[in-house]
Image (cartoon, rainbow, N blue to C red; front, side, top):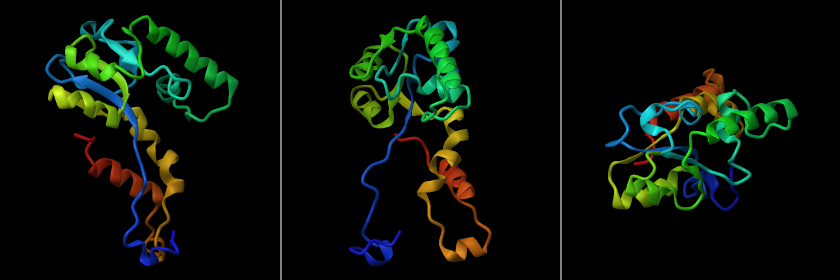
Length: 178
């Protein structure tokens, strides 16, 4: 996109970007979480020591993504399946928490939490053993979710570059926030 106030897009940057993923205690969890399934089928060490976001926009996200659905689905059958997934996960959680999950990580009350990447940084200020991962199921959906946000240059199009390839390269090259 060419912005009239910034010819050549030299000075403009995105206002904000973020994602949800899993914040966890590297010193108290034996394996790095790689999937949302950790909430529905956790190892014994995480049983009752995890939280998930509970607001309407985020509550069903892990269940939808675990089943390969878009977080923007309106299909009642897909939503029902995500609700069932979430109800199953609920039995393994400490609770649903949108505001204090990072302090629970600091104290060790929670060992893994469904969280926004930036909010994990609050906990990391007090506990450097907190890390953030983007589950593989999110990485797999990234091209479909992000391709519409990219505009390729004419040269890239001539070279056969695709937006999916650019998204995949960015996901592979950019580490999770530290």
